[in-house]
Length: 391
Image (tube, rainbow, N blue to C red; front, side):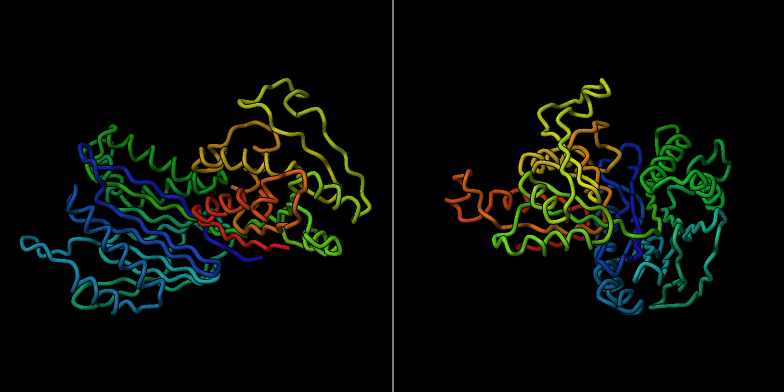
């Protein structure tokens, strides 16, 4: 199973500014991860525009395999220099991770990376050199499972300046806070929230500078395989069921006919849970009408098809992260929880036409494909790796 970098980030605008002078670009592929944090000089519109350009240029070029020299040359030629301070208008920090473990860090006037490994602060060796007249610091190091990595803009190091911390929160104190938070086993969302709340509190809810944090964690990819709809050719029934049972990670069936086919091929009993979970617990869900679930030995979740997929999609559209999902235990919410927790999602979509659905016959394709296309679009927008196999 592949290893990946989980990532969450948030920016705090300088008090009184509508736009943030920091910019973040995240590029995720199955075998690579690129995170760029750029801090525009000053604040407001100009800082926002120039940091956005810097982040976009750096992300695209590094993702395409450009050298540090190429990137710096492009930035020097593209972005102006402050005539008064003789400083570049935007700094940047770039973290590139290949295959989930091979890391390259490039820093230009940015705070160092915070890396927590085995609950201890780990400092990768930074080599300093001049590139196009700019001082660049670089590091190449290996990542391991459960490593936490944090990039911050200097708005974090300045937090609390003149107050709780006379000289500001400072990088070492931020690193100590990260070390303390990760000991609880938090994911990147919770770590991000903890750091941003602390930063905002140090500013007395009035940030004196734009402040951005990118929280990352190295972990194994979570895989889910979903089988929905019988194949067009009944002779392929056994094949699709074997594809499901042989897949990595959690296994889900969406569709009554699909569930019956799977139970028949596996020689297992199909138990339908006619009494919804919320009725057994006495806790009414926020929405009603979700079809019942079923159970087949070896399958993590068995639900109805089109209706449940549609409901799950609506639930996901109202949630930015998995922490935003309702606590309900109905079929649609459970399905959305599996999908939002997954990184690699493989959909096996049977193309048999349901004779009871006239719309299917008119379009010449299963109605479920309309929902599948919308679901795939939502999942890909969340940087998940999604594959669809039509049979």
